[in-house]
Image (cartoon, rainbow, N blue to C red; front, side):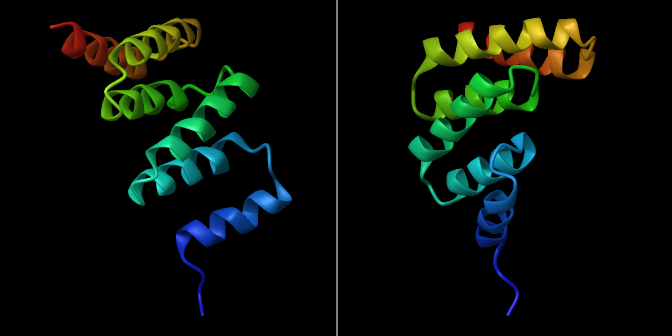
Length: 105
């Protein structure tokens, strides 16, 4: 039997526990299971250990929005803006700025 995506990620993380992408994917799986607090916790750890992992900022902001923690969402989006500017990633920069705009509107 082929393991589900959640179990597959858990297995891969046993071998590569600090892999930002695998942890990010696991956080998304927790969110799909409506375990938002666990998803937030994982992405917060990713950012603490790998500040350059840009996708984490947008996703954590979205998770904070879902948890109705709008100040935290704006703060993390703004942190992501700085990283996106540093990497000259205009697509992500635009997404982060739009997310901020929609909250502040």
